[in-house]
Length: 431
Image 1 (cartoon, rainbow, N blue to C red):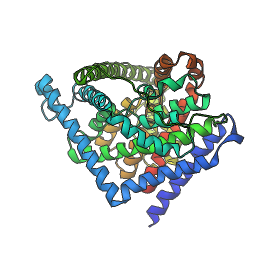
Image 2: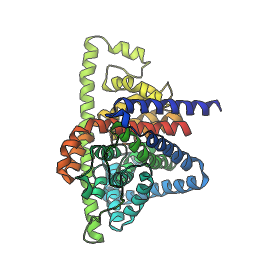
Image 3: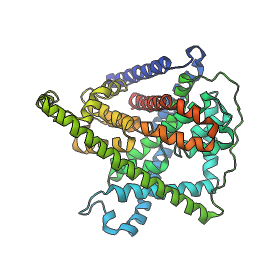
Image 4: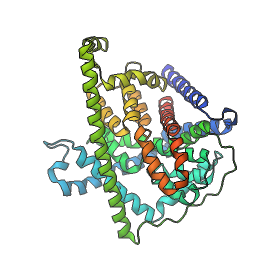
């Protein structure tokens, strides 16, 4: 019972802190719709509690997570056909990221194109958008935020392309925060591979909680964006999904989805190569500085051997440790989780999840609650590179909005980060 009260208390403390940060950075504090804020937070908690505690929903989402893992394994069949023994995680080569994770990205991108072509994805998005509109936001905002549950930050706005040109700055921020607070289904498979490896039970666990995060991050994104930039102008309330054509026929849709997936996989691989190398480059410079000033020995002693010298990861760990503690992470592991939060924000979530997988497997992060909270808090595109991705992607759909998108970039990054942390608070409180 004491543990339950502590979990809830830490969750409330963390949520209040995040709401306070949103209030501090709001461009119009007097215009904040507190009814929307309260309803949005209640929606997050109710969705999380409902899925994890109500038997019917628990069974449904448990089944969905199992099927999601089954689809990942089906994708492995295509990977094995192409790469043979390189695709065997239990073989002498072990887990090869470029083969396993990037291959799944291509497969899931093709699947998304199929569901879009058949009209299935639009119907599911419409249901979620209808629920989000109850928070009092516009129809296009609802559709884009709901689409981000399944699609990436530049694909989701395609569903509202005709409306973007006339959207207000508040609506634009909502779209951008929605994109940063969530991830695409195609890369979700990669995260599950990082954390679950070839353990089916672990795969099911992480698949379930990443699916839940994808859902509760939608109202979180709305709450945060409407606090940072409250809506003060009249907006369009209609829920209308424009008929965007994906391929001339079924096979063409598969082909286009596969091509888009290949581009995404190459982009992901390239970013990981560059960001990982840059991280080691920073560590080389910082380690050298630590050696010149005889700091490294002191660092190893003061951190109990957790860090052996001055490094990028160490600085991020201690910088973000208070945030990790506030969202419910154990005080013994808050530095490690702080490091992951920093890596996700400065680099990207892929690097952070890879580090998370390594820490989990080595026992550096072992507390079940810390693992759960970290899974939720990292699950989003909120990083510096995403600002550039959104400027390039969304401004192509609406060139007149480019200036607004550019000016709102940092606020969107802050909003996406806070929304992900809110999801972590909820997960820690109800676990």
